[in-house]
Amino acid sequence: MNTEPENSGEAATEDPVVETTPAVQPAAEEPAAPTGIRLGFVRGAAPSRWAKRWKEITGERLELVPVNAVFGHRIASEANYDVLLERTRPGEMPADRGANNEERRSLRLYTEAVGLVVAADHELAEATSVTLEDIALVKLLDHPDHVADWPEPERWEDPAWMPKKAAVALDIVATGAGAILLPLPYARHAVSKKEHCVIPVAESAGLNGGHIWATWGADRDNSEVQALVGVLRGRTVRSSRPGADADAPVEAPKKKVQQQPKKQQPKLKPGSRGAQLQASRERAERNRAMKAAAKRRKRR
Image (cartoon, rainbow, N blue to C red; front, side, top):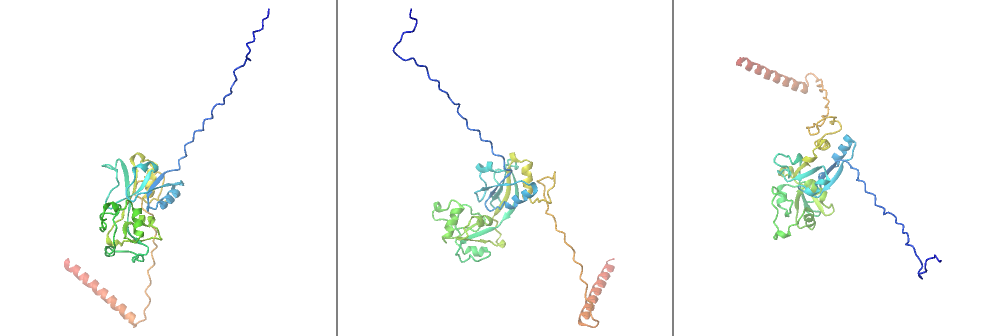
């Protein structure tokens, strides 16, 4: 008996074995290491001096984060910094402080001067300072960062023509069409030295360019932020000390002043003009002393 299977006319085939390589998953990116505390700053605030002082005291780098605003701050960018150097208009307080400063902490640091920005070829370009009388002779252009307490600018014939920001106003100034007022440190930072000239407004004019504040969220009010606030208030390597309250007022170290020895009066030749004048002064002093003593006796 034939036990072999019948040939069906088709070659018997086996299913091929497909080897699959498991997909390689991309390695998860490790979170970037923190670079230290971050100090935001409006243009013109010159934070490098505090960054240097922070480095001297803590040995750590202070990360500087610029904020493109003349006045105020942008809430959207608050996540980018721990403390902000913020500029407010004269007489104003930082926004979002709450009724008792509970939402946002703030510390006023200093007040800025005002600068008049004119075209580089303006007739006042060589002046070292300007007064209110000088400003009255200049065509002041209105712009969003013009402070109400400053001399009134010329209004735009069509309000839609007003520049939307200071940078655009500076472009118009460069054409010679007029001048603008800005906080002096901001103006010096924002202008083009080839196209503009910044002239400080004299202190006698009584104009303020704005106040610089250190502000930070109440949720970030920790020891490191307080240490930075202490530096902003003027703490130095000499004045810093372990365990000190970073928010306490810090006085700058006073320089020792050496007392100058009293000059010896030169000896005068008897009978000389100098000797006669000295004798006359001594007699006048004795007479005044005698009159004062006589008055005191009468009172008794």
